Image 1 (cartoon, rainbow, N blue to C red):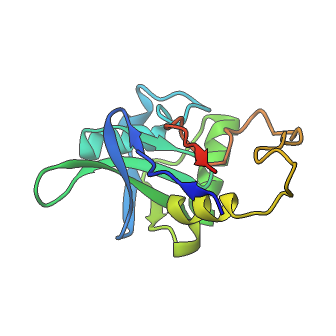
Image 2: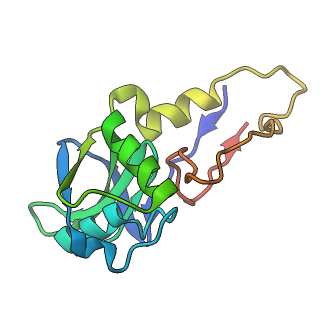
Length: 163
């Protein structure tokens, strides 16, 4: 079986870690000032996180990345799962540009089967046959262009498989 090399996961040079505790963000009217629809790092929800934590933030349909400092004052980008209700708020905001001031976005720690390490490990162990490309061409998908892509992935370092 192919051995996976260690993956250096970072966003803007800040390490990405899986969140361990839930987080609630309250969106205020002032967060709309510099916000852009359909932009994961500049939507009102990301602007609210920037106001609260003074760091980077990116919100996708199912995953959010929020920079916070830990107890030792070291910065990390925490990866959260979105609740279904929070996902509906994001979709509504992307389509209409409207949101209700005082809206609370709930972010949850990802369950073990949704962590990046688990997903990476299990995608690589799929058997594709002796002569098949380990990275087959993906089928074209039709996305609703009015809503950001909900894969929850960032442009991070790629990894290689050693045979």
